[in-house]
Image (cartoon, rainbow over all chains, first blue to last red; front, side):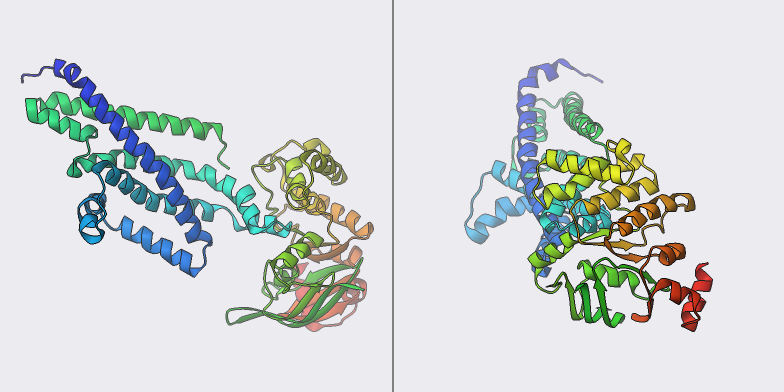
Length: 218
Length: 242
């Protein structure tokens, strides 16, 4: 087998740009996804039937369809349907926000519901309003239980950005394919890309482990 | 002057009738002990007083405020009626001191310093001043329950509700909790206590209520009820408790 590992060095600037794009989409997508997920999760847990049902439909539709289909819909179907035209990068970020949001909503609901009812009752019995029970008692306890499953979702969403190759966002995987098309160095380039994803997911894992260690899980 | 008034109160869970048109007046300073077989409605009766369960029929007044008068009024009632739970329910992320300071800080709007000073005095009262900086997980069950009593007292309630406060405790730990409750009763606190501790009922209670099928079956002075041969089903129940 004829390999030439020096091509990695040659194409490193391009690969790094791809990795930057991957990180950017992930960062924006997860930040938005956490906001959407927190809101949808609270709606599912504490909302009246209308809020609860709305959040449930959103979650089931998103969880029940592949993310590739979702981003294709955003990028190709939306312009036809509603004359809304968005660039590939925006479509990619929205796809992660909407997709991660649905999964995070269920993580939030699970964490909130795992906190013993008695603790909320103890807060209510002291005369606290419901929102204070959530902010001062149930929320902080649920947050600790949120971190492990949230870490899972972070890693999944980061890797999901590679699927946006289908709409031509120049993230890491797409960059790799473009380089490949020019020089056919499959072993070198895909090895380098795999390692770069590992470094990114590994850093995420370490970061979350650090946060977790600083907080006692109760 | 009654501080708690049940007026024809019913409580349904779906089809199930847990409280059946209960009439009951509790006066200031009374120590009312509620006993009865499981499912007789005693815990539900207690939890209706502070609106953790909403009544489905009749009316219930606490310090002349109806539990049906809306959420803001219900919160006033909850500040007048402290509750102690079977499972303690201390906030695990807070120390004993901060558990006790929690209510005054978040309900009465006291400063952290003020609330902590008062909390320390209350912990002293339940004999746990030296455990102030311990987390609930570092305390025994009996200690946790004493902290829970201090936490409820911190909001300065007029009535204390106890929902089987010693049922989750080992026999040797029950006594320290019962002693704190006895002291509270001697200070004149109005108390409603669901318990199976018959010696507490006999010696600390000023009134004993035996519940059955969501109704008050026997209501009277503990010594008289427990010594006389009043109700055959009560006698049967007492045989099983001992």
